[in-house]
Image 1: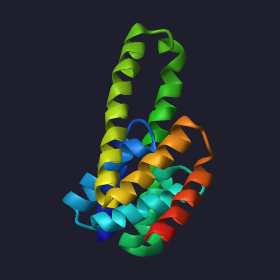
Image 2 (image 1 turned 45 degrees about the vertical axis):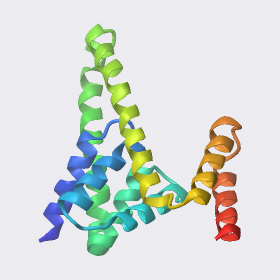
Image 3 (image 1 turned 180 degrees about the horizontal axis):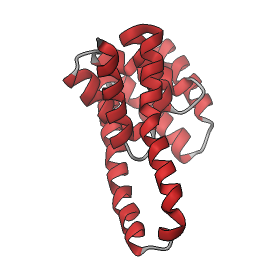
Image 4 (image 1 turned 120 degrees about the vertical axis):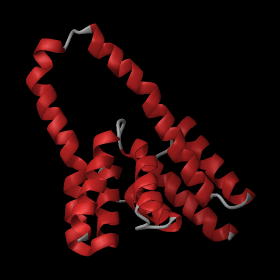
Length: 172
């Protein structure tokens, strides 16, 4: 009986998450950890790590990973389909009406209002992940250094991940 609940949970996450996978993380935390109790914060951090290093969008990777943890292969398929279904339906609807409203100031206002919300959702995800995964000053220094190197100095994120992993192994 978990399949309909799994579908509804991930459909809701997909429906109300604007701004991509990172903006989706607070919704996943709220729905799967707090509301459903299907995963714990440590599993959430594991999901995030695996979703980030696996090719593909983080939202789909997260849904696939969590669905599998919750209900095996069937859960994986249900979570993946249900998290992308709202976007698919919304895009089909928007495409139908786009020509009529593409120059509307109201549409422009809506997207201008959504941008700060997406930024705040990503900041919330950053706080959530940092709170659960940065446990001491050494971890904070590694996180800040990688943020600086990837965000400011523009090194490859892959190099940053590998570098952080090697540094973590050496320090810990």
